[in-house]
Image (cartoon, rainbow, N blue to C red):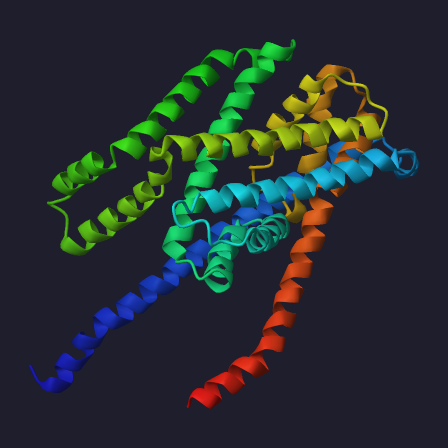
Length: 362
């Protein structure tokens, strides 16, 4: 066979690879587009169900009668909750956490929360990787590990809250029936956390033994990924640090419950504290489903469903959902956008100085 005949054969794998990559990208776009379309449809349906038969003028009038003192306090609780998350996030870098600036961490969190609200693709977590590398010069791998542990703590706290709700008052049967399974799930989840944290070396050794038959590149990639994930749990191996992390998690979630209760008071809804707890659990579980940007519709309808067992009629629950949405998401959207703008201004201001410094060194 001549050289001219061999050339196309040599190019075939490259072309096939290009076609394969293009096909994979197209599939990912289709999947993400389908998810956004599904979420938007669900949000529109929830918006229609929430606002059906409730005049907008009635909602506006009820919001105008809200007690401004409680509204201001609830906004402060939103900001305080983010600052507490920043304090917990700082501790997750233990033992290299003392040099971190709590205000820079808060800035990164505000930007992350704003992006997660506006863009239904969890891009806020990616932004945290970028800003921590830029603002605090921390590696993306280390930051990713802290985010994983943070989510782990939040899930564990949510399971505990879901267990406590049925103890407080009588709620719908669908929630009461889940109490036993929630207890088992919380115990298993906590046990898995301790096992992964204290048995990391043993698990890595077992993984290396089981993966020895895989291709070398696959084996190294799997081992690096698992090692990174398990290394992020090392912070839990220090009892005092783990206790502090649990304490911060308790304060963060308590702040959310208190904010719900304060908004009740702002609208003259005298409900038990358990209603605020139950609402928080329902919202945290419910808004995890795909939805349109901002969780519009889904957020409002979940509030109506969660308050119905406490005798709150649809119109009053809808007014509450709108006010809670404004005080819980409004400050995050505003400050996130502000910090993105300010970061750009700060970079433009520093650029002439860094350019001059670079020229002087040359």
